[in-house]
Image (cartoon, rainbow, N blue to C red):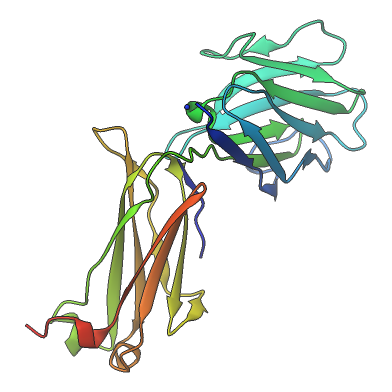
Length: 249
């Protein structure tokens, strides 16, 4: 299980764009299936520059593109609606020109333009037509920020009496609201038994998250090193734990 978590000068901002085809049930449609594609998979810009997200509506030639923004733990916010026959987009509450705008290259190719990009523009952006949508994950990184601070806790004494134990990994001091979390056991990637929370905003405007790995007690007793790695933008931190280094109290 992998989570992707959000994190000014010569600050490099990388906009990693991950594309997922979403089912029409996420945004209910009214007609047949339309395949919407969004590109590119990776966009890299500097803070203060312009970010462009392209969306192709496939075979639809006379439809409009609707863009939504969703931050971790929040609901999708309507950014704008744009139809190629109109001279300007229609905006949602809190969004306006010149910060956000849109244009089109054809009747089925639309572009969301975000000017003077900054950290708060980091979010998941949805391009939606009548019956389909895809999402683009926009991650802003700041090369001057420190990596996450990690703490891994050993199993409790009560857990050691059961067949399974849980290793909590706590990540704090993250300046962005997206992160990737991964685990290894004895140097090998772990794909199951992982439960990762969403990011929780703190009073100091940083984020925290927790990720718990559950393994067989017998595997823990083999004294393997279990490592948690959290990547936030261009920064990452990794911390390991094994039985022989833990207190027996």
